[in-house]
Length: 122
Image 1: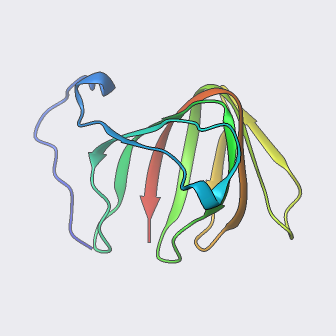
Image 2: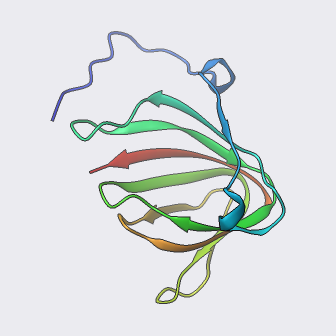
């Protein structure tokens, strides 16, 4: 794994990071047309972890997580839930920390605009 090296202590302002905006594909939508924004601090690659911020508006969509990564996240604000055919609905809100396992397939439902910080691992 490639080592990440940070040369100094610094304060990170997420609003100054590159913004990647997207919407769920029509065939994945369940309710709403929620805008999603990711702001990667470190882009994910198979050889190194990824770190960044993610936010989404209220809505629900089918969700398939890549099979080559796991996510650890901490909710900074808002509320969302994840569920699948084999996993009961699990709600996450401000202050909660959770994991999305590689290959997860289910529903992501945002009930209050959400913002989280994430770490992506292989």
